Amino acid sequence: MPLLSFIVFAPWVGAGLLAVLRGAKPAVARGIALAFSLSTLVLGLVVLAGFNPAAPGFQFQESAAWITSLNVHYHLGLDGLSLLLVLLTGIVGPAGLLAAWKQPGSPRAFGILFLILQGSALGVFLALDFFHWFLFWELSLVPVFFLIKLWGGAGAGRAAYQFVIYTLGGSVFMLLGFAAIFAATGTLEFGQLAHLSADGILAGRLSALGHFWPQVVFVGVFLGVAVKVPLFPFHTWLPPAYAEAPVGVSMFLTGVMSKMGVYAFLRILWPIFPGQLHAAAPCLLWLALGGVVLGAFAAMRQTDLKRMIAYSSINHVSYCLLALFAVCAATGHSGISGPAVTAALGGALLQMFNHGLSAAALFFSVGVLESRAGGRRGLDDFGGVRSAAPVFAGLCGIAMFSSIGLPGLNGFVGEFLIFRGVFGLVPWAAAIGCLGLFATAFFYLTFWQRVFHGSRSGAAKGEFADVHGVERVTLIPLIALMIVLGVLPQLLTGLFNPLVTSWVSQIALP
Image (cartoon, rainbow, N blue to C red; front, side, top):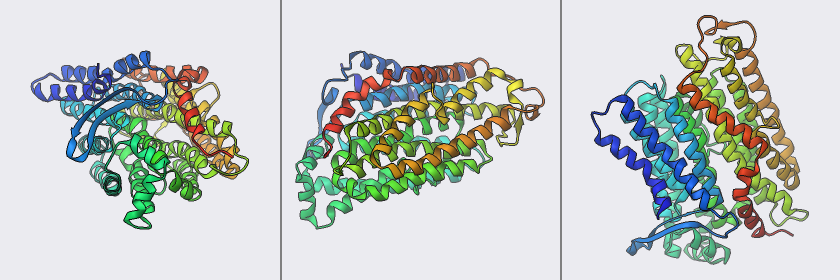
């Protein structure tokens, strides 16, 4: 049974059904969109039941010749990393649709675009041939553009165009890089390219095109991935896009779409360009630290709550890049230990999942505040919300403390492993990165104090309803997962620990 194809295309089937049902009532359109979005989680759990973490290579593979003249295959496969992100998508996608349950405008059009976006992200996580991987990668831009432009805030038009121009521009360089790779090797399959790279054949064939071609191709592919993450200083499209997007879309952008870039680093750049990454790692470490430290300090200066969380997302995703680049920089150096590499890589994978939950919950919480305040979402627009809405305050507080990294919640485990690994690999980088931790605690606690504590003021001074109905259904599962995974992180680490161990075994440790 082609389970992976079902996972990818089920949301698109839902989008097609909504497109046909032009006269569907709003409640029916919302229900259909939610049901097909939930299919990802249901099918993901089916795959989880049959997944063997200890088995080498990809599982549930599907492969068929597609464009024989170009040696292009329809090839899907899943390992621990892919499964982790499929499950994350299955959680955040329905939560985003629930957050948009009362979104003004056409719920049918919103559902169509959202399901196309969800299917595209799943295709990125499961495709193993660059040809259709790139189709999924680029197709995700289209629904995001329209979701921001049609349902976004006052600056939505500019934010949508900036998002598309930045990400499309980076993708052009990536496409040119892989065109050169195909010209040199005749294949676009990730597995074959990784083997050619490990044997030194890929670098030799690219060098035959020109002495600097391996470096040029690496830079092209790197730019496409770096913009998507985004890596500092390619991040300038992100704050306006996240801030102007409707809340449900912001949840998906930060929870899932930002992970597409980190996934591409692990799936493409690392296995295909290990030498170039090692050579560039000292510089890339500083860029990752820029995202960690400057992202946190930029968040500290924001008065718009959505922009604050947007900059916080740059900070948290940069932790993953810090771990990856620390491993690349330390490879082959004396004194490097396998446990440090394992901790850094395992922490990066955990951080990808855990940040997706906490950031999505925080964006939804800001959406609740905004809906109660008639569109206002400034840091000084509220006060004493805790006394007006105690249940909401408790749920939002858990999400906030998860982002800070409070022990006992899911955010702590990933950050601890990342810094434990980076301290063992590049101690000075870990020391500088701690500034980001301090700044994160400062601005989130400031947010907590000024919005939720003190006497009721601003939008909370009058009638301020607590979370209810769909709002609770959206927020409570995310919060419950933060608590469960904070106490039992092995529920996730068990999925990818053998994969991380295999990665470490392939790294040149002295």
